[in-house]
Length: 80
Length: 230
Image (cartoon, rainbow over all chains, first blue to last red; front, side):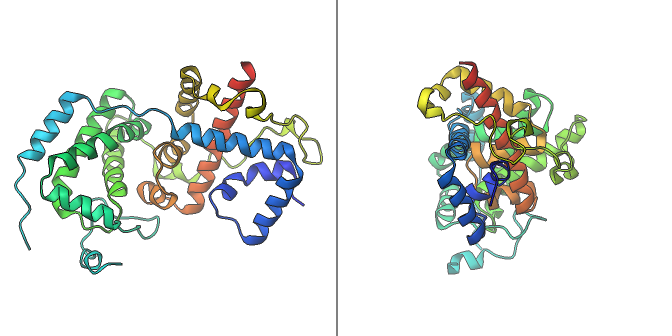
């Protein structure tokens, strides 16, 4: 049977869907019995969701205008 | 694969050499979007700039020593995108292609600026013995001794969405080794599929997963520390 410590080392394998059927079954069996590991998985998932919600910088208006101008000046591709 | 996609095989996209494995080809929506760019639809290019400028800047900062240089690298990347646009063959996704132009340019600049993430840095040689959770939190039998708390019980997830929490997370991300930072940036922050991450960074799937695991473990620990302090 998996220990809690072992489970923490294969969490990403589980979340990324890269586990074999039996390993996944073992993992899920442990989760079913261990509230602490359920809490741990919840923390990892929350971390991943929080990372996905980090704000991204927007493109500065002057740089965007310059690039759009360059794009607008490009000749259409030659037809092959 | 569509007939159209088949006809796009054969000519390498800029920066397409790849040790990680075969690329995931461009999707039908990618190809439709490329067609709009080739028709010089300014709205399409404007959308592209809005969608990828921030993620590109974030990734560039992993490879080069300063924000000023990172901004230059991103601008060079956009110029590279424009130069290569009409040659893009759809052998990779549009996203992978753009990010790969960025990493190629960022690595070149990193070398010039005396800071680069060497290829070997992606082999996880520095992390062989990093534990996801410090060993002291487990009993000798491997079960939890100091277990994690369920965040939602007493510290709602919205706490993590505060400006202060996000700042704490950004500091923890910046402290990651560059290889782990690059992987978690692409996979979790920018939302690339794992195959795309492998192809952009030219690493194996296993390697990517190990680096992602180490990064996520550290960032979880950083957020746990933040939540416990509250």
